[in-house]
Length: 414
Image (cartoon, rainbow, N blue to C red; front, top):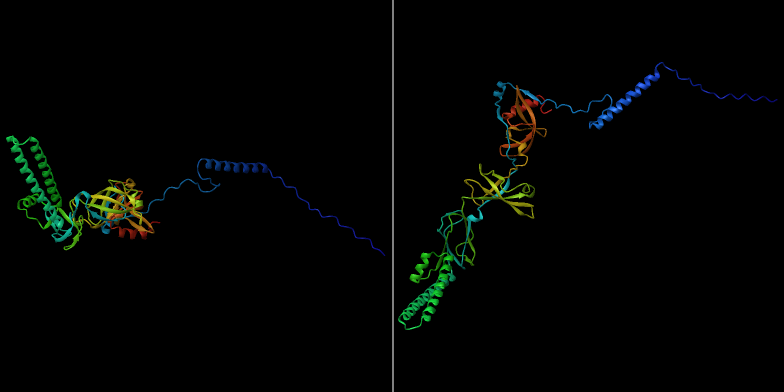
């Protein structure tokens, strides 16, 4: 018996409900679309105006005003109790750099080298390094065979000149008597002039050696040779260096002393090339070892030292050198003038440091306010800073330690 197949169920279809229409729905959608378009247009307008675009409802990108400076309320009585000292602010004429090593020297036109003009043996030294000397004072004595030979040649030439003078006198007398022709007198006169020229040369040679004119005249008169050559100071000054010792045998031209005038001194400074490129002749310098010692740059070397890339700078010291001496090592400041018109010089006690930043306290009504500054340089007890300051502002320059403690207790730089 066969059973009939069950009926196939019809596919299930899901009805979708038609959206209900709300009164005024189309108008709301159009209004929202219009608002979004307005916001987009406003963002584009701000972007083209050079401002940062903002989202709807976000903060405005306009720069916010600077927050008020931290102010410390300090009464006059508290100021006196803290021992605060105030001073007006002044612009800096220069910006100091860290000191550099230098050496005091004598200008080339103020120094002389005393050298032996002939080979010989040093038999006496009358001064030593650092001794003052006067022009014409004896410095050293040399025994030299060459010196003896030159004296002998002078005496020989003096005898030849005397002989030529006598011959010319005799020939001229014979010419006047008509015994000989005038040509013989002319020849005798020529020989006399030649002999006198040679004699003058010998005298000048001994003068160059250092013999005084009076000594040369005494030699010609007595015909007695001098064993030692005495060397004398050509200028008044100080003995800067001694190079020889008694008993030493020297060649001609060997140095014995260096003598220099100490009234005008210079300083030679070894400067890194980075700083040398910012310098110019006429720029100021200061010596930290000698308060008040200042000078002006004379020349900046054109050669760079191969080992440390340094440049030699030479400066002239102004005024009285005081206790400075040639050869002395000193520390030299080379202040910078570029940017000084925006900088101010203050005592180092006026600058406070906190959290890697520097501050000063400026007087305002009822107390003080802190002002951030940027140190540019300094030397000794003075510092050059830049910041939101103005010439004539009154700063705290003493007693800042107690004021800083109170400042930190109320929040410090934050």
